[in-house]
Image 1 (spheres, rainbow, N blue to C red):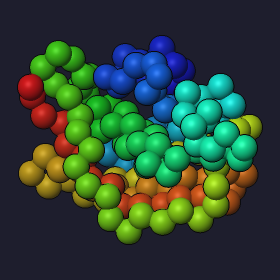
Image 2: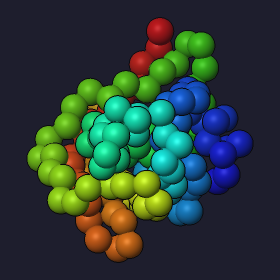
Image 3: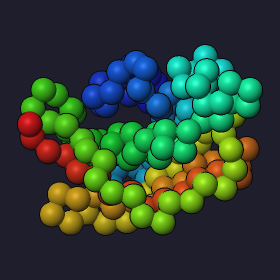
Image 4: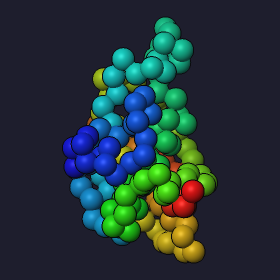
Amino acid sequence: MDIKGILENLPHRYPFVLVDRVLELEPNVRILAQKNVSYNEPFFPGHFPIHPVMPGVLIMEALAQAAGLLSFKSMEASPDKNLVYYFVGIDNCRFKKPVVPGDVLMLDVQVERVSRGIWKYSAKALVDGNVVALADLMCTAREV
């Protein structure tokens, strides 16, 4: 899935779209997506000017957006003015290495279970095959 498909399946828009490409997607199972980390990201001038590091919360958000793509494709639904996707929880979150400009962040998210509209995922972010962050995520789609 390219950026056009991502924008059709996520409600986020610039500067908050944190997924650039989907490489693999198996509905109800797994997604592998990519975020190209560029020095031009709006958060780098402030985090940190001398040593730019991608904020950990944005790594988690990128994983949640990948999870959202997986869930919408699994539900055969798309976000619209009546349906949004909320990030409702993070457990066991760990950051292993900093993510810096020039890195290609791979977002690997697997569905663990779906119960009463809450999707639980096992998620990890990798750079050059090394885990940089991992967490168990929970998200839900809700009508507004």
